[in-house]
Image (cartoon, rainbow, N blue to C red; front, side):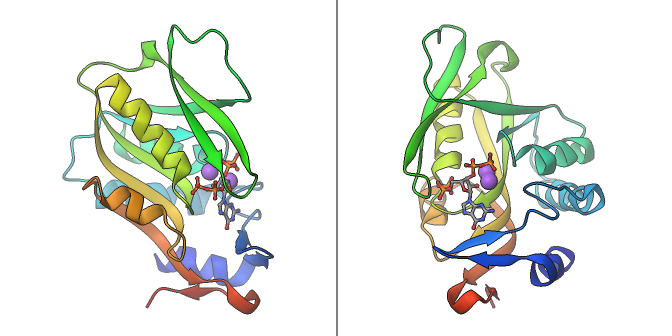
Length: 190
Ligand code: G4P
Ligand code: NA
Ligand code: NA
């Protein structure tokens, strides 16, 4: 998606350890116009799927997920993050390990927001090692609902997230694909 790549080129800052900072439009300040274009693009790419709900993880997944929900006219559920959980009876939960922070968080979704025939689209801001998406897939499996697709705003193709997902044969769409952040420079795939 050219509009998004242009913004990354203009405002993205490459930090050490292969981290791209995009907090002027996605991770801190949010550009609603750009996010609406992102939402419409996901809606277009998954138009042939019968999506009933969108799943994401708080906090940075919420903006693109809500705009996609607006474009597709379906509700959006964001999994909540916890350090630990004691009462889990009414929740679907999964562990998410963060390689960058070297911590494990639990994510959860209330069972009452999932219906038996739901067929969901997962949306997230970044795909790096795929642990957040993996957690949502675990929850979807537990809840016995079908994941019809995964939409990512920015994929770092040099990390292993994609291989985790394609193993499961789920349609994966990334709107910007970054193949390298070496020497402080953003390289897009192709
Ligand atoms: P993974 O889910 O793909 O395995 O990501 P990883 O553990 O490597 O990264 C942990 C957090 O850092 C995730 O956000 C992920 O979206 C984010 N992240 C990964 N690579 C980058 C990057 O290059 N730039 C930025 N800005 N973020 C990156 P999170 O902890 O869930 O945070 P948030 O959603 O509350 O912001
Ligand atoms: Na995220
Ligand atoms: Na993030």
